[in-house]
Length: 73
Image: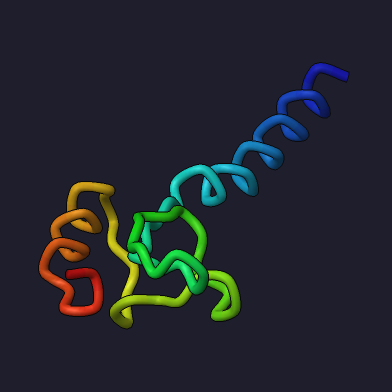
């Protein structure tokens, strides 16, 4: 019984860890307000338009990219 519990918890943690570690930040421009912002999900292309072609690993990198983007000035 104890062994099954340990194996079950180990399996659950192995499969759930990548979901927590995969945080990406995107620079997006609103289709209605035309303002840029940093978002955690990839823009859908309808309400939010993607600025640039890549995701950023940290929010600080995304904010720096937003300030440098010509579409956001």
